[in-house]
Image (tube, rainbow, N blue to C red; front, side):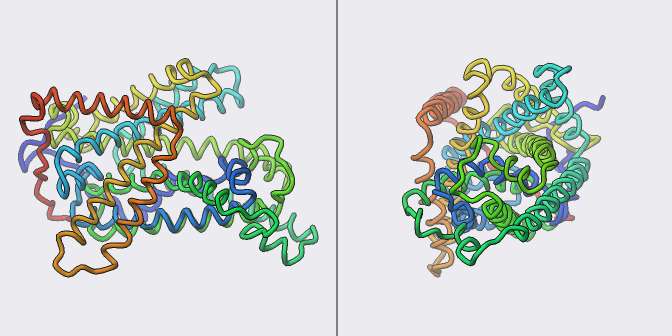
Amino acid sequence: MASATTPTSANAPRLKRSLTLWDLILYGVIVIQPVAPMSVFGVLSNRGHGHVVTTILIAMVAMLFTAISYGRMARAYPSAGSAFTYVGQEINPGLGYVTGWSMVMDYMLNPMICIIWISQQAHVFAPGIPYWGWAIIFALVFTGLNIQGVKTSARVNTALAAGMGVVIALFFVAAARYIFGHAHDAADLTRPFYDPGSWNTKAVLGGTSIAVLTYIGFDGISTLSEEAENPRRNILLATVFTCLVIGILSALEVYAAQLVWPASEPFPNLDTAFTFVAGRAWKPLFGVVGFTLLVANFGSGMGAQLGAARLLFGMGRSNALPKSFFGAVDPKRRVPRNNVIFVGGLALAGAFLLPVIAGQATGYELGANLLNFGALLAFMGVNAAAFVRYYLHEKDKKLINLLPPVLGFVICALLWLNLSTKALIFGSIWMAIGIAFGAWKTKGFRGELVNFDLPPEDAEA
């Protein structure tokens, strides 16, 4: 096995620029999941009083502001550090470190909760293998595929996107057949957007706060900046296009679902509501959709591990974490191999520990809430960095440079403040640990916490 080396000179191995715009969009779509609204459809319908389409579309507009900020900052800093680098360079190195620490929690929890979900689902399909056996299998598969190199992951993403696309197409065909086979008046067709009998602005806004979480994951695109072709252009385009693709596709999915199963009819189970909708449209789809969600979480978990490894690489190279381990690149495959293995090990450990700590019924839920804690902090940081760079430091104060980051920051702050109490408590403990580590590393913050000097751009960039 080739030993990993730490990039200390221009001749040291570095990440390879091989991802096209299409690869980046596919990565973003897979991490977010093209079937993202299916798992939360029942909850959104209940919280928003049936206005699922409206909450999805409002959330899409809201997240586009943050997506623009991410894309613009990636243009300024095509580095694997993502929000960590943006905040540290534009605002303050200490705040950049804090942002990076929150993202570490976010990125490492994503593959962890995905392993929990798919291991439990796989055990239902094949009960001969226990939950812990499936957890080990999926953790090894995630790690093995990601350690092969980024193009291998991109090819897997393409296959996953194609498979989910087929299932989504089948659902649309089955839903259309069901809808056209049942009488609907004009009011039925517009009710998913606006139903005067059940409209409640507070309820719709509450549903939107949940719907926004459907889009979390698009920021992972920026962690691939050093492996993207023409990153100053493609990261911005991929981030915005990913939000648009997911938003429009999600709106179409839930619109068809609401026509098949009107909001006035209660669901047998809110958490699995979409599977009942699919089963009503065409009975075989009940099991197909369940399997598809398993595949979707597989892709999301694998993609999140890829993003986490590269985030740790950015922090390791910048001395925020031990550089000899986290800043190392495998000279053969040119991937941060140590980090991929490290994240895989933590994800497997979490898959065993979270259900024990929180209970089988709440382990996934606790992990998901904690994930949102870190993600929203990072979103606020990136919006603040974009505001500082493109508005505060510019002589020509343009409105286009003011509104997206300000609106993005305010929306994310409101969502963060409305997280569950458990998420705020455990998230705060995680942040306290990170700040304590930073204080120890710099002897009371008297030394240099982070080195943000970036390596020179490749000729290919």
